[in-house]
Structure formats: C-alpha cells, structure tokens
Image (cartoon, rainbow, N blue to C red; front, side, top):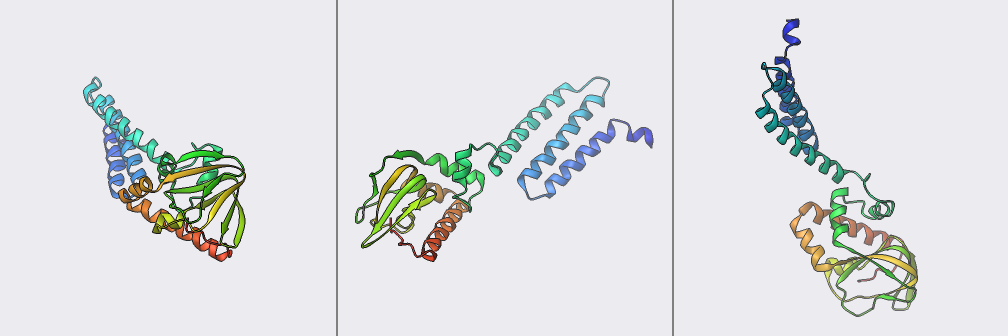
Length: 222
C-alpha cells in the first residue's frame, strides 16, 4: 500500500481529483485554477510513469496548461486593481457598480482631456453627444437662476445619455480640469453587447442622480 502511494500512479489520481472538483465549481477562475493544477500533476505522471518521459503527451498537456495559465492571469487582472495606476484606481472609485474588468473596458473607450479655466463643457439648450466625468478640477453648473460649484469625480450628462434630449444646464470650468469623455453612441454600443455592463452602468447613473437629488443639487439634463 505504501509503495503504491509513493508510485507515479498516485499522481494521476491527484490530477483527476483536482480536475473533477474544478468541473464541479461555478466560478470560472477557480475552475481554471483547479484544472491547471490537475494538468500539472498529469505532466508529472507522464514524466515518471514510463521508463522514459512521454514527451509528446507532456508537450501537449503543457500547451493546454499554458493556455489555461494565461486565462487565469487575465481573469485575475479583470477582478483586481493591483495593475492600475494611482490615478486610474482613483477614477475607478467613481464606478462602484462595475467590476475592474468592466471598468477597464469603459475606461478604454473614453478619452482623457484637459481644459483651462473658463472653458464651457456643456451649454444649456444645445444637443449633447458626450458623457463627461470630471476627474480633477472644478466646474460651475448653472441651470436657470440656480448654480453651484462641483469638483472632481462628478458625472456630467448622465440624464441625456440615458434619456436623450438637450442640455438643460451650462457647465463651465472654474479651475483647470482633467476630464474623461465618452461618445454616447460608442458607450451604448458597448452596453448593448453586454447585459451585465448595461445593468452596472444604469445602476451607477441611477445612484448618481439619486445622490444629486438627495443633496438638493440641480440635476442637469446634460
């Protein structure tokens, strides 16, 4: 019995155990980790089982294992923020309903711009085709006889993005700003291609509008 437990054959059973458990879990990351672990034990089995290593089978298993490892790395990257720069991680805080992978896709579709003090970003009564996120700086938002000042990490244009229509507020830069811009059509296309992303962004903008109402801020239909 002890000799059997110390023989290469036990490696095959360990490999089978890892892969069987992997196929039973629902989380894709853990599935791939367990399948990859099983592949590693199978490679060890093929190396020690015969008088000489079964190089052809080892190579084939190695290729499959490498592909799986690459997918594991990509999945970990999608679920974590450790590869983000300090500024990107701070921007991500404005997207609490999105996971890191969804955020990266949305961020990639946007364009970072800078604006000097005095620049008008949105004009009341004019069509608006962009969604804006103020990353740094300050803006003045004026609607009718009401106005207020807002600083970094505020969305501009979420109502127009969700429902269409002209801007009902004028937004101008009061302090040099950095901001992200997304084209409405491009962002809608991304949402149509992914139901989870669609739901996450709608939840985000709904929460943003609710927060503005709660704080008695004029909600710009921009």
